[in-house]
Image (cartoon, rainbow, N blue to C red):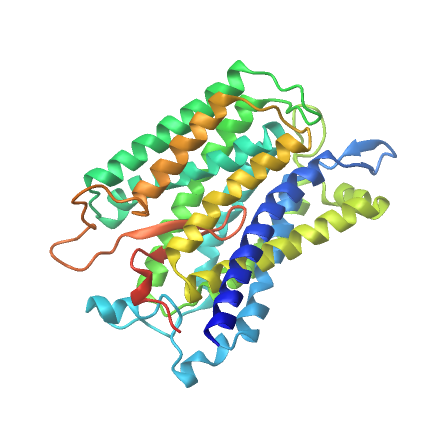
Length: 386
């Protein structure tokens, strides 16, 4: 039985890595596909807000995963979600179980802004650079935790944040120095980098809001992601028609949902790519939460870091990008900084963060999909259920 259990955990880890890598690559693949638009022209599928709507649809499917996993009956069976017991362990007040689903509208707005900026940035820059720069979310989350949550960071946290900033600078410098000769050369790498970094500010704001919710309410991550996805679909249904009447400098709408639908209908490859992206996001979220529950938050954070390697390797092998040692250096700095901040790598005599003598409230920063961050406790053993 133990061998079977271990095999299932490793299977979930492998699936999380697979779907996480695939979700990033499939988004870039969508951007490269040509399809007939509403004017009868063969153009690339450049619809970042439509991609955001598809992402939200994938997230909303997590509600089905939540129901299938029996989480909807957890209150009756007293099977506690992975984030619920942290209050009891820390001696804090019990979490509320009565909350309005409308509270998820606030993080959904942050998620919408973060995702749209990220997808526009992905259109303009390298896929591997996009994936690496998403690690900058740790920096903004750390700063926001000080500003809005009253948290203190220890020396190794600041060292980790410094290494991440250095890594981001090196990755950006690589894009300035070298011009790609790959098949998918970006249109404006530096503007893409700026947009991806700006997206991490909103994603960090989402994390702060989610952390507040997880601290005060009894919410399972799949439930939270699912409700945010459902609100996101509704929000996209309002925003997309409005964007058709807002034109950019090229005289075309900022995003045209009718044009996007026509392109999807005209190309079976694009249709499959969009459906595959929706499915990958849903499965990645489900596998990620399952890994955190059955293994640890450390495992999930490590897999997220490993995902960048696979995305990068695919882009080089597929001929999308060129290999540069400078980018390797930037990636190493990003990985070391993230692992130091999340205490996967511990400095000698390192201590976990304590607030006024209370148990640690430091959290891992992980990504549950291509934009959606998830907060999980630094001490996963006290929060996971067997």
